[in-house]
Length: 450
Ligand code: UD1
Image 1 (tube, helix red, strand yellow):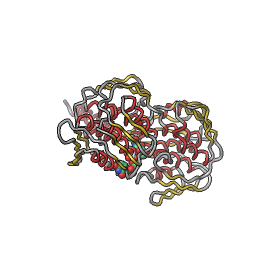
Image 2 (spheres, helix red, strand yellow; image 1 turned 90 degrees about the vertical axis):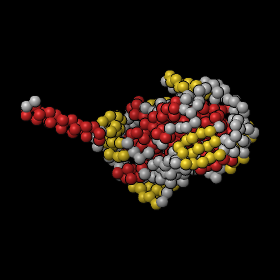
Image 3 (cartoon, protein in one colour; image 1 turned 120 degrees about the horizontal axis):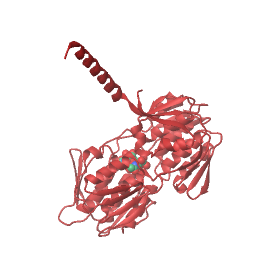
Image 4 (tube, helix red, strand yellow; image 1 turned 180 degrees about the vertical axis):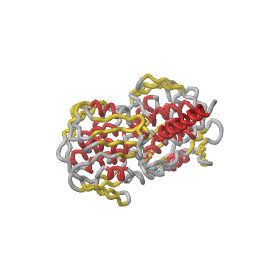
């Protein structure tokens, strides 16, 4: 090789290095050109949070079971990997998934997966009640708060589980051979969704009666109870403060349809409101959206029920309103960021108080970049409505924050680039395709170099 070859090689290598550096900073992003009027109909997918809990619930079953209306999301696929790692065989065909948990053997959930997906901690109840021992890593905190699991653990302990937390792993076991969890009366200090689900699943195969007081009442709890009952469990009261579970010896095959995603539905209704558009959301359950609908109407966007599965936005002049997030049937924390986007362009002042998670106002700084007038004090955001937002490059900080930024971008003047799409892809199936079908000017840039 002569000198010239070497020079050529070196410069080729340099270019490669530069290309690699550029590629390593390139990230997918959404480009939204705001101000378009939306119109048409959008079909809502199955509920992510229901599907995640029910996937954990398939571990209770002795036989094959089938779930339909499964959303195609990163989180759902990751939960599938958790189940596979435990010995469950899964077959997928579009939105229908089949689970064969007969060979459930592993009692240890892998840290690499649990650390990325908090909901995978929910496998602890089913594995413990079926196999008598479970080792599940603590899920750790996330961008919206510290997210402890002591209510799950205390519930399992009340049912007789021996629990030791060591080196970041929750080790739960039943002492003695063939022993089952024992029914118990459990009062939850807070109506935690996850703790209610963990205890309810564990109690389905426990000996005797379990009563959960101050239970979470979210529609996803009812869906999980319906799923368990369809396998032969005896659960009454799901959706109320008190859930009573009579333990049974085994649970068998079932075919269950996941409920519609109320948060996705409300996000699209918010898109109608913020762009002053008449849009229709279908395949939903309006009963699950009562607090959000009440708030839309208070803000000035009427939401009309077309039939039992369909709602239509009838937008009007938007005006400020106060919101406090609360456990269901209160206003959902998972809709707080999207409504905040709406309130930034609603006339007058609004106060948004986040009571469920301690660190769920990080989207404020990004909305401010788009011209929103928001001041934060503790867990409150005080918003003075502005006539319009302006497009800007923004960074999604969590799942629902990313949806809020998309909504803001749809309404803003000019171009908005939303980065941090790994958050969005966890919880919204085909978001940009759905918005495109409504007429939005939105596209994914696979290699955006911000
Ligand atoms: C679920 C939802 C999430 C939603 C939340 C509240 C899933 C997969 N996720 O999360 O989208 O935002 O409900 O509606 O269903 N807490 C404790 N100790 C515990 C458990 C919870 O202090 O042992 C606290 C949490 O830190 C949080 C609050 O209770 O501040 C609510 O959490 P929880 O209802 O458990 O939410 P998740 O089940 O994690």
